[in-house]
Image 1 (tube, rainbow, N blue to C red):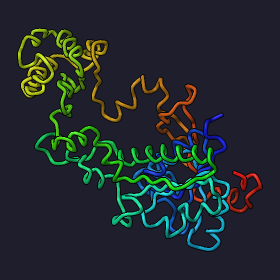
Image 2: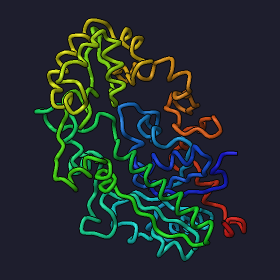
Image 3: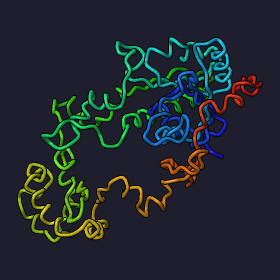
Image 4: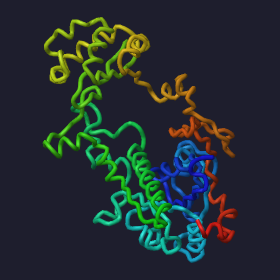
Length: 388
């Protein structure tokens, strides 16, 4: 049995942050019902190309919606509201990732829905929160990377501010954070019988990702900037180095790793150089150290250095996407899965990073737009639903 079997989540969601989080719950067995507005075509992600999967579906959409059901409702109509409230009566939580001013207006908060079911948890994933001067503003991942300072830390010194290369990383972090809040509130509701509102927003999560760089500024006024070779803010060498056929990332986080590395590359003499004898010295002289390391690492290809260093210190090849997804290791751990698709025949997807009892979930694709209306909307709530 999956850990969330028997849990029902009703989600008014679109694009990434909310859908990513609820997809993880679906993979753990939750019954996730995706509420979409059929009149407007549903989640806009269904139509985002360039790789479409038939009418109202795309690879972009399925990336965040595996394992879910779809119903179409107009929440602003009398009938749509009636059907929505019927779903809510049988649910454990209602999730939305609308603008911060919308949940209260259309009755998706605990003040409205808690009357139907006191143990209900209402999760709100917004751009800037629901109770401040920016509540009505829309917001997206890349905006938050810009405003939070993350873009100022990304890229090479002297280059333009850059977003992180991975698409939607703030959306993902927000979805994950939101699910922690949701599951925590659901555990509390199971214990006390009283639910409530949970709020997580893109802006706050993006700021939180600054981590120790934020702590340093708040306590010392030190402002971190872009680091050469994607280097660490205070430890060296922790950075990329070129090989004769590519790049690798080395991580000498401790003095032990530094000494092991210079021995493995045939330069134990570097330890006697006062510029590199300890981490503060290496960090102050990082440019000179980089020049010396480049000379050594350019002598051999990436695989040579992986063979020499993998048992000596933390080291990794710098892959492109194709290389990253095609390694024997990624295949052996099951991080790439195939699932049947009614139009594509078979769709290859990323597997869940969560394993339960050693097994990754294998959810199917999200239902077609409104495909579950008959099963979920045209039946009255049962007595069991009312008790949930």
